Length: 121
Image (tube, rainbow, N blue to C red; front, side, top):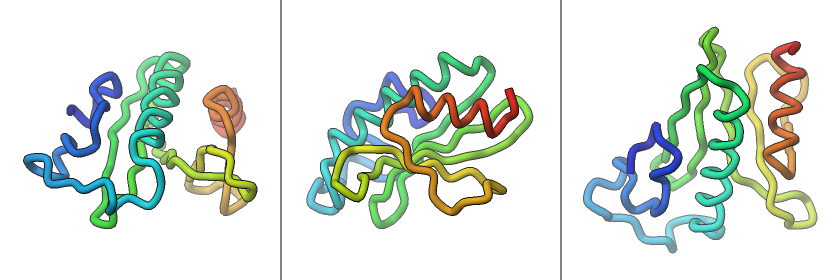
């Protein structure tokens, strides 16, 4: 897996954070395969909509995964897999300087709409 190329995100165990596949899906709180698939699809959609942007799939020690995006102006934001209050899959958008603490959206199209608003496009 290359953390900077979403088309390669097929198995979290192959992320460089785990060395040689030392990942146990039981460590992850949720459905790791479904979350990784949703992040991959959302990332591809975002990168298609915003040419010039880059991304990286980040995995923390507690197996939290998210995608860090950088635009051509070096504005960074993160997208996490999440669930709504009624347990529907969604995304959590973390954008520094946004007036609310949580931006939760259900689809990649909503992510793109909000990103365009945040960037005043």
